[in-house]
Image (tube, rainbow, N blue to C red; front, side, top):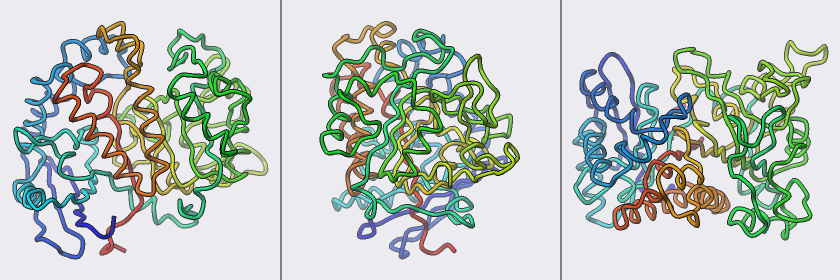
Length: 426
């Protein structure tokens, strides 16, 4: 990515929203813009009801049938409003000039907590263009995490041949398949798209857990924090997690309380409160390990050395970006060694929700398809560009077909946080 123009965009809340941008190597002039708090609030008031709310499962039917992301015209009107509010005119002009020359830059965004759920890829600076059409888009990892003392980053170039650790729809103790922490994917067969894709790693001897058939990867009862630690300490290229995340509420100010739901039982030692027969693995666990919990504590990154690339495909798994001090699951993965983390800005509709609530063809599997696309992108040398290529394909399908399975309610949720830093910053 170093051979093409890259612009670093940073936002700050101070009543009004301040945005600054600077091009690497000063390719173009930088700038600063200010948007009034009133305009920001109005735009967020239009966006928020269009997004699935993990705290209110009943909101999903409205989102998929009557919300602003349910129809192309309503979504496009929202995307234009997002552009008027969040894309500075000077930057838009520079991006358009590059587009006319056939140059696709990389936009690296550090949103303020207030606008962390904005799907930047959807922004429509022109009636016929989205930001994802003219640029690759990723998010900047917090510098305080990237440069934290003792952090041991792991390089994709050095580790790409190591195993893929896959935690896929684990069985959460104490919760039935149809309950709030039940199955995300439903009953999986060996010929399902995700089964075939991840199962291919087993044929290459690059998959953990070891399974006799791809269907055995799902709804496992043994993929708890101890198993995960053993797998990661043995060496891994990537981690893909599909399941449930409970995000901390932004108003709590405690992003470290975000929780990953593995197959851990309640008697397991950890910082999170037990839930029935289950104790979640929290971001605080990943950061602190057993500090203050045992007589011989071990740091989180030693218990769970995180591989170079991580996919957290779960509801609002990137929720820590909504906090002033981001110490949630994404930050914990980066602190543990990850170079790149793909997570979600909001709750994800399941394939069953698309079918039952929005009338999608039951043969369509939009969520599984998205999982396969994220997984494939993480195998590519330039994962950010590969993920953006997928989002460009989905944007084109949405523009042409205008079917609910192509809506950005799903693919617009994904964002990739990268540790590649601004070369002019320390």
